[in-house]
Length: 146
Image (cartoon, rainbow, N blue to C red; front, side):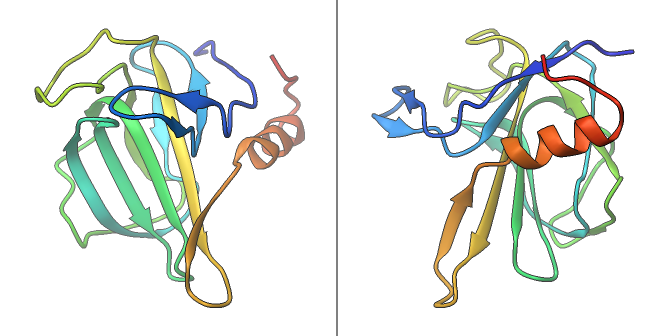
């Protein structure tokens, strides 16, 4: 029972820090909405990032990178290199980030920023719009786009 909404915002302009494209998908919600890993892998990035706030990055065995940002808190004390499975409870949706001051909140609405990065045939990493995948999964579960 956590209300949330999402829309396709991949590639939209962002200006905090510098002018850039939004290389992820924002799912708007409430503080405390659970965040679950969509893919298995190991923890590659963890902790504070001025753009993503409290974040966790999972590298899959196939090389894909799954980035979950703006968390209010983690589900547990994760460690770099720790293995997680798809479905692992990672933490709670929040509004952290957009500051070099660790723990900053309130600079934007509560949401989860989810980024997916894959590698092309030459090994160059590129971002993928996760909106179509998340929409498909939501509809398969009997949901409707909001």
